Image 1 (cartoon, rainbow over the protein chains, first blue to last red):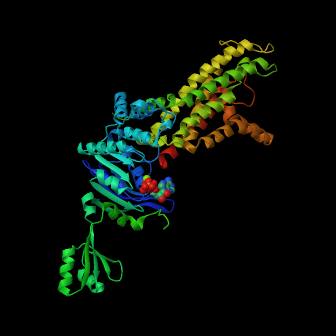
Image 2: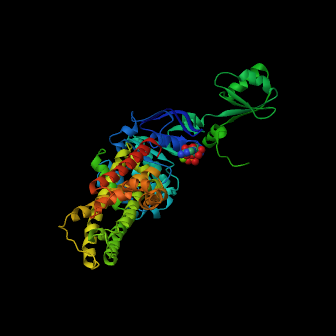
Image 3: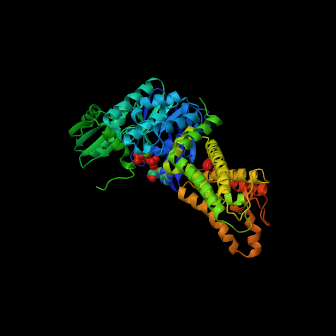
Amino acid sequence: MIEVREVTKRYGTKTVVDKLSFTAKPGQVTGFLGPNGAGKSTTMRMIVGLDAPTSGDVLVNGHSYVQSAAPLQEMGVLLEAKAVHPGRSAVSHLLAMARTNGIPRSRVDEVIGLAGLSSVAHKRVGAFSLGMGQRLGIAAALLGDPAVIMLDEPVNGLDPEGVLWVRNLLAGLAAEGRTVMLSSHLMSEVSLIADHLVIVGRGRLLADTTVAGLATAEGVRVLSGDPANLRNVLGGPGVTITSGGPEELFVAGRTAREIGMAAAHYGIPLFELTPKTASLEEAFMDLTRDAVEYEAAR
Amino acid sequence: MKITPGGVVAAEWTKFSSLRSTWITTGVSAFLLIAFGMIASASFSGNGMSAVDLALGGSTLAALAVGVLGVLLGAGEYTTGMIRSTLAAVPRRLPVLWSKSLVAGLAAFVVMTIGAFVAFALGGMVLNSAIAGVSLGDDGVLRALFGAGLYLGLVAVLGVALGILVRSSAGAIAILAGGLLILPGLVPLLPNAISDAISPYLPSSAGSAVMSLTHSDGSLGPWAGLAVFAGYVVVTLGAAAYRLKKTDA
Ligand SMILES: Nc1ncnc2c1ncn2[C@@H]1O[C@H](COP(=O)(O)OP(=O)(O)OP(=O)(O)O)[C@@H](O)[C@H]1O
Ligand SMILES: [Mg+2]
């Protein structure tokens, strides 16, 4: 279990993570989503204790990771940037990590096999391709047979076979009751693996939901002769109405049926009533639109 | 499965021994010590230097090389990104610094002590006829040879500490070279009274006192000198420990 509580991280004056709270629970895959620069990697570095939060707490399995007696058994991590000396072989790298935590040599060979690195196990890591580097990072994360697995953009650079491998691996680990958390900025990728979604933008929590929950966060497009009146009639708790054009409204929180009935009741003319099922990708884009830090010029 | 001090030391030894660059730097250090010792032994014919002083004539360059070895081990963690893996595995952090220092210091001590004995043996064989030969049993000879190993072992630890402290190989090597080579050249430019007072306490003069057979006036005694040098190492280690523990990796 990973618990992030009211965590804020500032670098100088820039607030990169802003009072972020969420929990990644055992037995499920938590997808950690957000546009570039949203603060995902920073949050993950704080979870593993590499960066200290400016305020707030992070707990791994109920306590601080830093105090753990057997950290690699507690949590395995793959971080964004390469975290390996390029002059060392995969075996030596994993062996050095294993020894710190008293993990037997046999486990090193096991994870090398698991990650499909047997043929390059003795090659210098500096000569590895991006995908092989990712596989080595995942192998390192699995070294301690950890209860929590946290991976920052694990499928980055993997070929289709590798992507499938990661997907099955993570699903299997969650099914065994472990906590699995992975970050990505691609909804399409995460929705295939994750049950639980934590979406951030500019360091703030935008949504803490499920894949199904996000998919049904849909709305209805309404064209009406009297949009102002319709707005008044439909308003209420849990309803958001945005205007698209002079006659156009976009209503979230009411079904097309409810809107039609209300319009008929108050005699408001309707020209069009279109339920809009946002795709996951669209829902994600809508959520994060205002929070995109680095946007291409249009 | 848990973190133990022995496990962290074993891991640091695995890291040390699995890099070609550490072996090359260690080899170069020993080679410099022996080669320059032989050259000095063969060519020097003046006064004031004993056969042991000449045999250890390569110690200044060897110190630089062995310091670079320490720096590569320390700063290399940061320049390669390995520090993230290292600290994820040992999140308490400080055991990494102690273990790395121990491994680098011990390895340098063993190799450079052997190097000092080899330099002494080979230097004796090519010794300039104007210099009186000495044997291992003579007063202070063993102390000087083991002292060379101790001093160079401590220099390796200093390199590790500097590397972890400044997190950049170039920066740490510059500080190391400045402290060991450039400082001793600058101090004599100061007014005599000041320069005479501080010279013995410079890292290189304090550290090499233990290797010197002939104890000149105004220099520290062998063990006092080594203790002063160890003090520099301890202070640097303390600063490195502080930065490692307190700042984001
Ligand atoms: N050490 C640091 N010093 C200053 N700013 C930093 C530091 N680390 C990260 N940042 C800034 O924090 C913000 C969040 O970065 P972070 O890497 O956490 O984002 P991310 O969500 O992982 O993005 P991506 O999807 O591109 O990986 C960025 O604007 C980045 O420039
Ligand atoms: Mg990132």
